[in-house]
Every structure is written in structure tokens, then in C-alpha cells.
Length: 158
Image: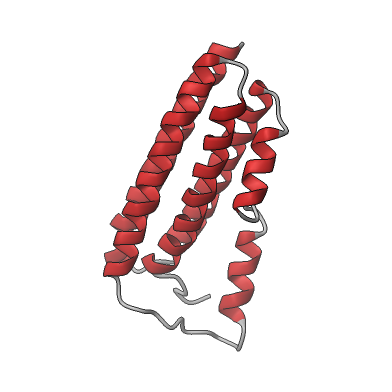
């Protein structure tokens, strides 16, 4: 498959994921039983909002892109396959998920979400133009930070 993805596509997906993630963590901060989890989730929600804004700004600075396809629909099919692994279909789903889980289960789910996002980004990393790789790597670093924070929170709940 050709290099179908540019940083703009990755950032567009990430803007949506950061938005839904912020909704999840905001709902978790409002519903968690553990005070430490409420505080940490509120902080992560704020970070997600900052990341969303940062990625949206980066996205706006990039030129529009028409992917080169080997056959009609190749790009859309590939994107849909990758998005099947996403944890939230939309903001409402993110909120409902946070409200329906225990503290520990919510943190474990959040870790799975962050890992799924990292897996997507690492897959996409293979398809971007080399000049755009630093933007993707910056996105990966942000998600790795979230995962590390969640691991620390999980140890506080055990």
C-alpha cells in the first residue's frame, strides 16, 4: 500500500480521540468514588483538552491532502478498519462508559483506550511521509504520558 496517510489524517483522528477522551475523564472525575482518582481524572481531562487544541492547531497548519489510491475506496476502507479498534464511537459513548464503571475498571479501561490509540498511531506512523514523522512522534509521546499517568493512578487504587 502506498503512503496513504499524512500527518493531517493522523491529527484529525487524534483531535476526535482527545475530545472524546476529555469527555470520558471529565465524567470520571465527576463520578469516581476515590478522591485521588477524581483529582487525577480532572487533570487528565484538562490535558486532553489542551492536546485537542494543540493537535487542531497543528492540523490547521497543514495543507489539505488527497490520498493516492491503488483502487477506488482503498483509503476509506483502510481508515475504517483502523477506526474499528477505537474505544469510543462519540462523546456520549465516552461519558456513558465512564459513568458505568467502578474506579478500578474505569482506569483499566482508560489504559486500554490509551493503548489502542498508541497502536493506531504506531500503525499510521509507518504510512506518513518522513518529513511529517515528527508530528506523529509528538502525538505518540503525548499518549505515552497519559498511559504512564494511568498506571500510577491504578497503583493508588490497589
